[in-house]
Length: 235
Image 1 (tube, rainbow, N blue to C red):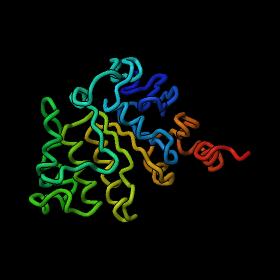
Image 2: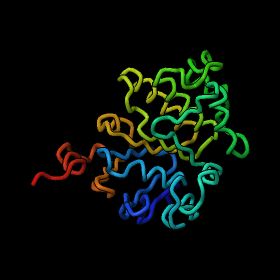
Image 3: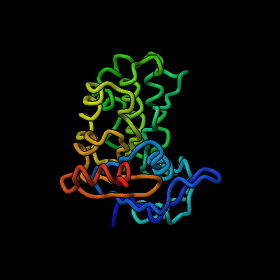
């Protein structure tokens, strides 16, 4: 049984349908990457898993339990935390206050504490008293990741964490991924950067127009197959 799975997941916004029968599965200790162009449905998939979008109960399962209809706060309490696209820090709060907000939904103790977040991203301790939104884009992304981790999730959802960041900053952020996995979290990474996704993932799912068009281990997927799944086969 997979740790987390979607089952014929459909989702949308009002009359607009964004996902059409999406099936993915995440196992313990695994990292999977969701790739695809803008508008492919990647963020809608993450929002559905995180409970931001509510679905039929059976469309998302966690440890075998149907959770598709649960609200976001209950999803966090179960052990699924999201690093949202755009970081979404609270501008009126300091770095440390933004981090501590992530602890409100957790029950019990786990590996991640405020000190361990600071050990993972030392610059955040140095900047802990300043407003979170005054930091550089990369440092704000570290805060968003730390805020999710401090809830001690079993599943960490990372939505476009490299978007708009310099390559050296992206490298530093992704360098934290092995430690996050060692601490017990399975990870779903949404990425437009195919190369980055292939480096970090055990399995890759490509999406186009709300559907999964290709799945497999990075070593099994050819450049042409990925291109066709990402953009559509040439007519």
